[in-house]
Length: 126
Image (spheres, helix red, strand yellow):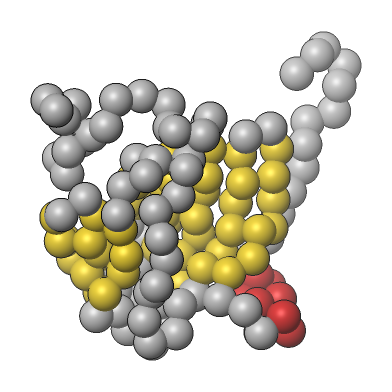
């Protein structure tokens, strides 16, 4: 930011975002963008059919729990957890509770910011 320029301001509660999802009748919506950053709220119903994305992404689980599958590894998740998905990785939520909702944060260039990571956050030797 240039000195003297106002900072971008944004505030959205999960409840307000869920209300907008209900009004639009969709499972996700983008609520904020700035540069390469995009923030969505995602609330799948019954099944998560998403496809790999072309940017790195972070999930911050707003409510619910279940199992998260990413790049061949499954792990449990719960409210408050943070999950990272490198660009182009196959991923989805499975066996999630009916109240499952997550913030989705996409960022960086198409193709991701760096080398692929394995499920433990380590550089993948491939």
